Length: 337
Image 1: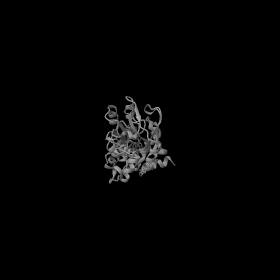
Image 2: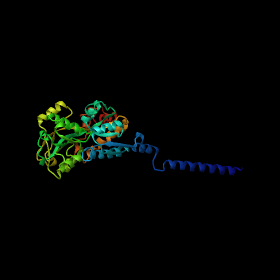
Image 3: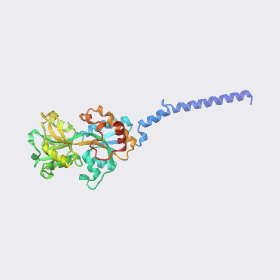
């Protein structure tokens, strides 16, 4: 082969190599991103967390948990990239059991119910749930004894012999109802207890099937507001002395005042409350739990719900009686240092 032919072959080989290199470069950047960009995108889509999907268990659609759960799910989805949805459930006690069984990863629960579960007490007797830890506390949940003005029920003693909703099976409301009845010298045997969720309680009060309902939720509660739109609602107050007795026996309660104007009331109503909190499976990785906690508390100020004003990082560890997830603790350590 002549020198001229060799030079031409070498030249053509060099061109071919350059073309191949360019194609390889184009392929690696066909989406306009660098390798660093791709790594960042992977983190944003949550793929490195090992979870494609997360569920938040809430409560009935007429309570406070469900609308807040929907907002929290959006926060988590947007900030972690892991698709998250809020699910209707039977609330606190059932939520703790569901997380233990692996049916969901995150749940709303009352602080008192979480405590019972961690100790294997009360409705969890003989069944310690230690697979669940805290994300953080949220807001006070008021125990409301709801009736209609026309029913004439003004005190707890007036409940004797009446059809009374005491909450859905597995809910924290049932425990609250039992303890409030107890402090007033009553028991479930003195009433005709009906196991109804908030929406069912609203419908049953409106139709006259029950005369009163215990509802544990942040105020104002959607079910009670809906009821008040068609009939005059009355919230039975708890006397200060009885509230003190309750708190002395069950330390997780606190005194609460339902403001005048709530459900159309003309004056304040004395009540008691427990705390609402979020819990998470222990198996959720620390980094993901950190990002979940950050997503919720960093975005809480944008919530449209009235309870959004209570959800603050500086209060996130208040009233928690169970261990805090290391990822959540990392977040609170950062913001509260």
